[in-house]
Image (cartoon, rainbow, N blue to C red):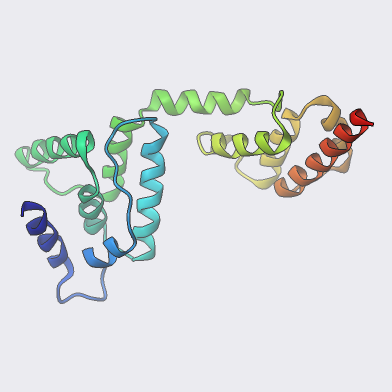
Length: 200
């Protein structure tokens, strides 16, 4: 009953103002994920990215972004938000911008210390015993925590190339590949060739 009332209140946010923002019904039709605050901290970032993509597609207002996102919080995350909102209202700082919501959300569920540790994992990442495909997948996964290190395609490609095993690195470095996807493709071909040579 309380949830239905809350949905109706959210739905009234843009009544009579169809040009600005989106409705709660449109938001829910996109099947936004929920977040309970448990598990791997990277789930928090994944949730924000998924929610933000929906909010962007629907052209939601800043206020709607906060309200609709908060509506998809459950369990521990919902209790955290209720506490945050209550404190802000008591201090007279009721309205939270989307940017601020993301900041306090990350501070709670994906703290700086964990983000820094993931950035270090990226800095230290090398090909090792992984396949080129596995290395590329791990590289992409961790790169989001250290985008400042690879601000363009060339730096992204060079960092990946430098982490390749010597046998592969020696064969692709002379090609001076400037595109990440092309480098992964060529490194995979070299890896297959090396594997075939060992099998023969």
